[in-house]
Amino acid sequence: MAAIELRDACRAFGPVVALDRVSLAIAPGEFFALLGPSGSGKTTCLRLIAGFDHPNSGQVLLDGVDVTDVPPFERNVNTVFQDYALFPHMNVADNVAYGLRVRGVAAAERRKRALEMLDLVQLESFADRRPTQLSGGQRQRVALARALINQPKVLLLDEPLGALDLKLREEMQSELKGLQQRLGITFVFVTHDQGEALSMANRVAVFNAGRIEQLDTPRALYTRPKTAFVAGFVGSANVVEPALAERLTGRAQAFAIRPEQIRILTDGAAPADHVSVEGVLEDILYHGASSRCHVRSDDGTVLTVAQAESGGAAKPPAPGTRVRIAWPQASAVPLD
Amino acid sequence: MLARSVSRFLHGRRGFYLALLLAPPLLWLGTVYLGSLFTLLAQSFYAIDEFTARVVPELTLKTYRQLVEHPANVDIILRTVVMAVAVTVASAVIAFPVANYMARYAGRRMKALFYVGVMLPMWTSYLVKVYAWRLLLAKEGIVSWGLTGLGLQSSLDRLLAVPVVGGPSLASSYIGMFIVFVYMWLPFMILPLAAALERVPQSLLQASADLGARPGQTFRTVVLPLALPGLAAGSIFTFSLTLGDYIIPTVVGAPGYFIGMMVYQQQGTAGNMPLAAAFSIVPIVLIAIYLALARRMGAFDAL
Image 1 (cartoon, one colour):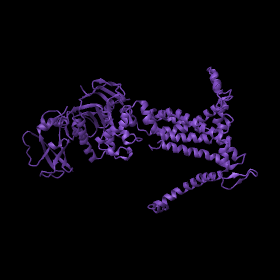
Image 2 (spheres, chains in turn blue, brown):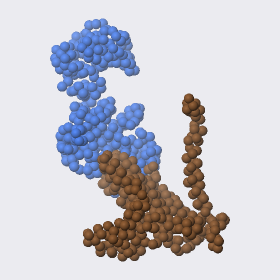
Image 3 (cartoon, one colour):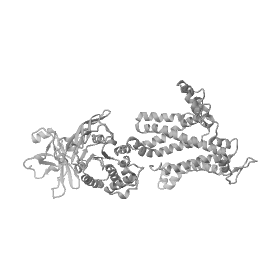
């Protein structure tokens, strides 16, 4: 049975449709990502699961039980908020123990369990501090400990790493992943960062304009995007429109091709089973490990080519010169 | 050209610049507010000569002794404090739901309407309102008339028959005075409370519910503690305004004296400036004690 299930969930705010007939099922123990740009409906989706918001139509099920109209305080789901939402008038231990306090657990017992949770996130020595005395990363851990103290079956995380700087974010990514594996509970997290979704989640639902564009494993999303939106949002991709596609391959179906699959041919001839196109090299952007070359083909389509900087790859020609680029026929992904 | 060279001169001389900016307001605050306050304080340590009725400029505790030993004076202080506490508690109870609605539930237009509604009475003359209330609460007034029309005349009579707080009519009872005080100071409670509640992020309430707290628990453990600074600010207004007011007790209510009336009378007709000063120190001391208590209770922890 699915830990979480949405059935045809719709949510509109006045004329704005935030969620448009969304259905999904998340298995117990999954690390599930809701990925999409802002306004795509991913946060609304999370709020429906947490119970902060209710669908206009459709259902929300937790462990097979319809909880569509059940308030948040009666759901066995806990949330780590984007701004952490730590109570400023309580110290760290009281924040963590809050879930026990409202359930009537005795003070000594809740202090003990709060300290155990703080131990789990390596903050036991901060128990008596105020949240304002902590750094962003530490607050995040307190929020995590607080959300886990009620031993929920599902943990929801709203942009959990959004407010952290890059280095801390990478650390927390592997820490969250490790924590999820140790606890074995379902994690659902909202993010607009495709790198985060790909590296942490078992499965990812890509949202766009209130709908799920594609729900797949990270690898499948990257290697077999179904729509131009997914191809462009998950990693970068060149989307070749039907007109040019027909000229190149004989089939009038749009396809996506990753920049790292394209090579600039230096000796002219394209290898067998490669597709090639000619154009003007417009500019080269240096990215450290690789460079990105923009090539404008004769019909105006701009294709991005990623060239590895290491490994003795040939230096790209100067901007402004005519080049021929090519990619293996098999690496192009046909789009719906 | 001149402006430019002045700007250039001031740039880099931050201390001088600050001093220049702050000197006028500090001078004003220092002399007019603090200066007069200290003069007042000093006055209260003088005493009046019984025979000549002139102030003897010698430091003495005689006036304070008179203040706390004279039973009538103690009565006045107690009466004023009880009224101030009652008005403050009633204002808080009435203001909370209104402020909460304004801060959390009202849409933009509704919110603007409420703010104007709360502040509008403050734009009218204070005296007009007090005298209007006297007419409203009079024996032949609209309140009495309305209650009679609703068949509640006997309830009103029973209320006015209550010893001490009752009286011949609402306009000449402590109940009437209490109503007018609450009416007058309610905006001063609603506004800081609404401001404090507005600063409580929605996510804190969601986090509380998420962790299993029912709405009542969220209110007690999250909303109320975080609204305490606003409640403290508002109650300082209602408490101190009631402690110091002399017009409402003069116009509406029972004949018992209040601190403000005593200050007015002692410095005026009685000519006993030291006793007037001693009386006006009472609210200051009470407010200081109140603030210390509020601080100890954690009212300012979330600031």
